[in-house]
Amino acid sequence: MNEEKLIKYLLQESDLEETKAVQEWISEDESNKKQFEEIQWVWNSSKVLLEKSELDENQAWQNFTKIRDKKSATAPKQNQRILQSNWFRAAAAITLLFLSAWVYSVFLPQSGRAYYSSVELQSEDTPIEVPLLDGTSITMNKNTSLSYSQKVFGKERKVSMVSGEAFFDVKRNENKPFVIENEKVQITVLGTSFHVKTSQTATEVIVVTGSVQVEINGKKEVLKPDEKLKVNQETGEMEKTLPSNKLYNYYVSKKFHADGIPLAELVATLSEAYGETIEISSEELKNLPITTTLEYGSLSSNLEVLRETLNLNISQQNGKYIIR
Image (cartoon, rainbow, N blue to C red; front, side):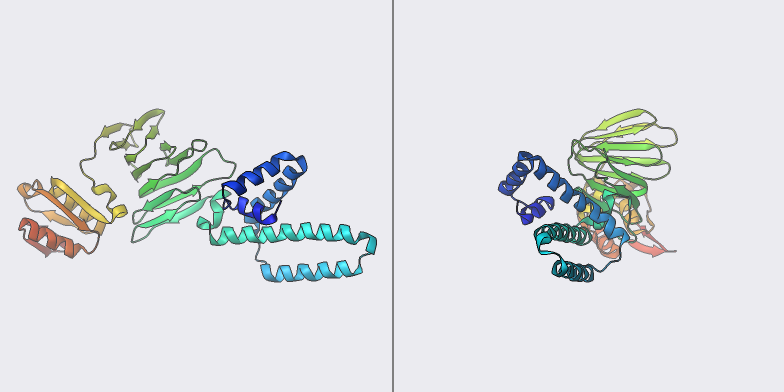
């Protein structure tokens, strides 16, 4: 079997015809299977090399070839063929080792570390989108931290999320459920998209596609699209409702979509998104319906849109915005 085809197969870059050829080659002979398992072991071991070694690959290969050439020159003629074969196999293994280590460090998310350890992810002043190894995408709102692991031989894909807010677009894998957990709440999915907001006292889950199972203290609730669940982590109580608006995903869409909702709901989201205090002076204004789409840009620009749309008076007093 061509070494290039095996490497492409391990990289999951082979086409259907090449994949079929490799799989047939592996199954047709026990020695082929053993050879492939050896190469696969080198591939899996490369991540350990990447983490623990500071070896310069180019220098290592130059040293290797010097030793190989020296050994070949002094070897007896009758052993020449055997030595060449052994050196060729060793060279192929080392080349594949460095190639796979390079792939891990350059192409795979977080250098592939989640395959064998836990990876910490942190957003600071702005939302960030992070791809995971399995094809899942997480959009983390600002000031959110979590960790995840997707062990090669593990039965689950795990995320630990203590506090913050994130939107998960999970790549489906029926053999490896995707599990998000904090101290008391566990969220289990196969492949879906949903929003999670959690703190030490409460967790909020809103499902966009697919289904999500939420569990606390042995009690379980299954959510379908456009359903919302609020979990009290202190009492274990779960309350299922419908989301009152679509503002929860502003950090994902980069827009604030208001569709006939009370002004107070939009203002509350703007306050949270920009970290500013915005107050509405009267109950009448709080319940005033508004339909608009605001870009997640500057707060002053968005307040100006509100002022013009609803003919409001907006001023700054004592470090906060007042809407009249």
